Image: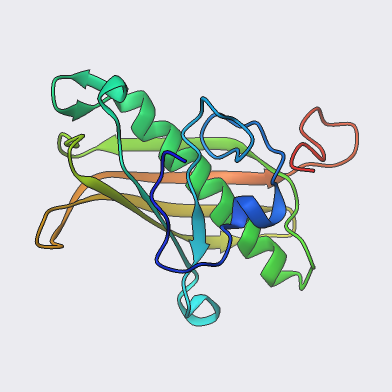
Amino acid sequence: MKSPSHPSLTPSLQETYAPHSICFGCGPANTKGLRIRSFAAPDFDTSGIVTAEFQPESYQEAFPGMVNGGIIGALLDCHSNWTAAYTLMKTHRQSEPPCTVTADFHVKLRAPTPSAQLIRLKARAVEVKDDRATTEAQIYTVDADGNEKLTATCTGTFVAVKPGHPAYHRWG
């Protein structure tokens, strides 16, 4: 996998609920994708935070040593989507997350994101309605000493789709 193993040995949200997904950003079954792995924080019930880590590769650069903005957008989109889906599942006390799609997302690139450093993503839902959640997410780079530097932020709205939508049951 292209993203490093989470410290926990438990499967990611994607591996648990959508093992056959081919999504470029988060699909475990897409061997050419980013294959990010999102995890609910241990204190999710109080914090609502979902985290992920990703190690970029040189072919994902915009210029030497810096991650392409499209890759950053894909990381934030998929991680935020899973945060929304998991939050909706927990809020509605369901056994699996609804299939959600991106209604809108807005990325702000705050600083160049070095490709040689680990990327840490953090997201949480800031508004939850019956069929949608709005999230806020951040990308941090992590240096050799474990210090985080904020390089990008995202706000997005993700909607649970119903039968008849092309993405319905796409995670199955």
